[in-house]
Each structure stands twice: as C-alpha cells, then as structure tokens.
Amino acid sequence: MGTALIKSPVIDPRFACFRLAIRESKIHRRGVYALEPIPPRRKVIEYTGERISRRETKRRGTGSLTYLFTLDDYWTLDGAFGGSGAEIINHSCEPNLYASIQKGHILYLSKRAIRRGEELTIDYRFDKKIGDVRCRCGAPNCRGTINLK
Image 1 (tube, rainbow, N blue to C red):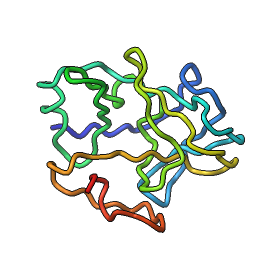
Image 2 (cartoon, helix red, strand yellow; image 1 turned 45 degrees about the vertical axis):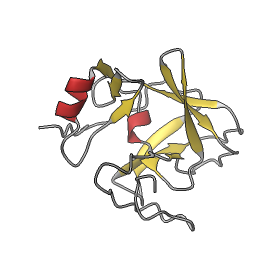
Image 3 (tube, rainbow, N blue to C red; image 1 turned 135 degrees about the vertical axis):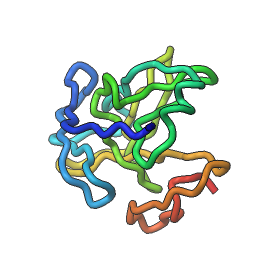
Image 4 (cartoon, rainbow, N blue to C red; image 1 turned 90 degrees about the horizontal axis):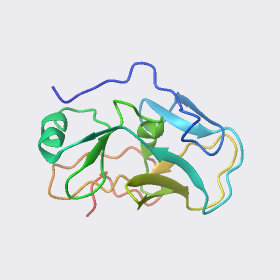
C-alpha cells in the first residue's frame, strides 16, 4: 500500500528560495534542477508534507517508492501529500545539498556553489538496519547503496 506515486510533481514557490524545475533525471525517474546559480550555504528549499506518526510511517513506508522524511523521534513528513517539490530531489553519495532540521522544519541547504542546470541531490542516509537500497548516483565515490555503511 505504501507507494504513493506523485503523478505531476511541482515546485511550490512558497518554499523554494531559487528558481527550480523538475525534469527527467539520469539518477532516478525525475529530479530537481537549478534554473539559476545557487551560492554555497544558502537555503534552497524546505521539505514539506503531511505530518504523520511513527505508526502511520511504518504503514506508508512499505513499497518501492516513498517520500518520507523523518523529522524527529515521533513525526515524519510525507512529501507525497502537500510536498514542496523537495521530495523529488534524488539521492547522491556526493550531494550538493544537506538537510538541516530547525524548529520543526526540514531545510535543504547548498553545500557548495551549484551551477545553473545542475541536478540538486541530497544524501538520503538510509539506516544500515533496513534492507540495502541500490544507489545509481554515478558519483566517483559512490557507496553502492543509499544506506549508510
């Protein structure tokens, strides 16, 4: 049941600090791309979605495609419902974004300068206790899995 395919994902400009677009990706299905240069250490987009409990997270977390981001020990955001577009950002073992949780908000910040046209990526850092999820990021130092080693 847990798979919620987002048929027409969009970037919600209320949560994006730069012009971004969703396009086909070499990494996986679709990705988010910068339409303008992004300086380092800047807020790029906020990850939004329905706030769900641990029990509901377990229920929705099955399946091959989910848009869940753990906020804290109790809450998870499900980007499939009310997502800002950040839920479409793909994993990379050498990402150009990092997540920062501040006052109940999940912010994606730029690790370095990002060029116009570059795909935005983040390290999903899946727990090593769950089954390995194969990585297709293509980075020179790719771990081979989205999971932490």
